[in-house]
Length: 175
Image 1 (spheres, one colour):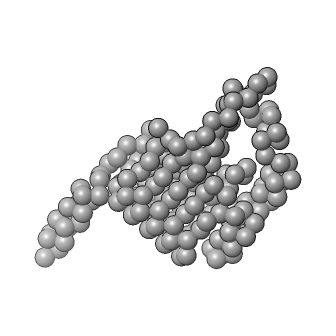
Image 2 (cartoon, one colour; image 1 turned 90 degrees about the vertical axis):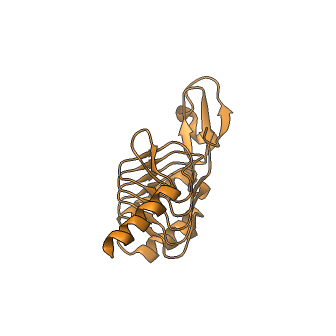
Image 3 (cartoon, helix red, strand yellow; image 1 turned 120 degrees about the horizontal axis):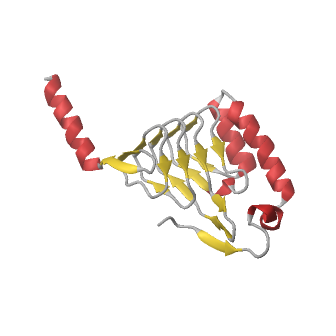
């Protein structure tokens, strides 16, 4: 189960009531900053925009690729460790609006994580240090440190121990 906080709503669906949950000017500012960052090819500038205007925690040497879409309403709930890569057109959500409730959850991406292109990360998920998420993956639950995951829904393809054994066998083959 993902780690999210639930907030029930009455009457119309939760998204219809969006500006009761997040200020309009915050959404407008975040929209502008995110759109600039999505198209900015200079990674240090992109990270500065995320840190300064969106209050995201972005580690040193982390590279966020072109067209990555971070949560427009709650980007401050996203944390990415050092020396990680977020692939092209990935979506990182810290919220989900449903009919009778909305949910918020922190997204924590560890150090030296590789997230493949066109992946979607749902709220309340932690991706452990050294994990690899294959392209096009729906990350709907926590990813163990060092694991290689992929698919929709996400499945563990290799654990850290299995990955280490593969690397050792590869080194033996090279000899």
